[in-house]
Amino acid sequence: MSDITFEYNVPVFAGAPKSGTDPTHRDTPCYERLDWETTKEGVLTAEELGFDAAWAPDHVMLGRDHAEYECWTLLSALAGLTDDIDLGSLVLCNDYRNPALVAKMAATLDVISGGRLELGLGAGWHESEYEAYGWEYRDGFDRLLRLDESIRLMKRMWDTDVGEGASFAGDHYEIDGAYCDPGPVQDPHPPILVGGQGEDVTLKLVAKHADVWNTDVFSGTAETIEHKIGVIEDHCETVGRDPDEIEYSWDGHVICTRDPETYERLLDLMIPIQFEEEYVDRADITTEEIASDYFLMGTPEECAEGIQRRIDAGVTKFQCWFVDFPDTSGMELFADDVMGQFR
Image (tube, rainbow, N blue to C red; front, side, top):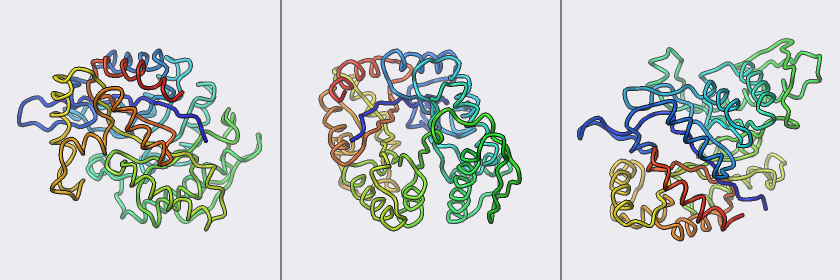
């Protein structure tokens, strides 16, 4: 079994509402205004506390006032500001960048970071961003086919011998003599994480290509994770791959505190915006069940219990949104009283 790792989701946008009628974003409900020094200090604190990786989402206008840092520029900056923590995209939208260029970008970032890149990839979903930025928004199956082809193209570029150009002719992408020198530091390439839930196509793509599968909070109960892993293992048998080559990650929200008032305040921020009917098909679900089944929330002991349930289901990587950010006390308590139990 792989080592258990604890990883930090970078607040790249502010989510606190301007007024009582404005929406709150679940990932950063206490972050009132996007500020580079604040976001940067969060990453540096996570590294100092011993978190294993820092992950940035790939959106362009998701936060308050539509202000958000672009993922790849941010990761490149963090490569120069940090020393030990891995850096990853959770997840890079395939349609936002040409895959041959992404292969080159990934190789360069892996070199300058000393082999610390983890490349998270997804088919894309945020239609309003496509419309605003002029990207073509295709149906879900088409987007997934393009992601599959992109990963094959990138691997071709990374696998081609030094001094030789890579060629690839697919239905959606084509390159002819595309060089990728210098290549990635990591052999054979940075770990590829693929996010998504669809059992017929997405999880088969995971079985074919991914080193890590990621699930988010909405599908992150231990029971669901265990079922999805079983689907991936079945697909591995179909495509002829050893399922032990794939790790499993959980991406979700954390409230870690010993103060009941702080817990209730933060929980009240999360529950109304997280669990509307579109996400959970259970009208009778209680707040306590939501906190226990979908999040890591409560005392350090309660957080550890939630982690253990997911470990038992197969998860080895925990990518955490700390709900109280920019306050770092929850992250600090989590590092001090939770992480050490699993290392």
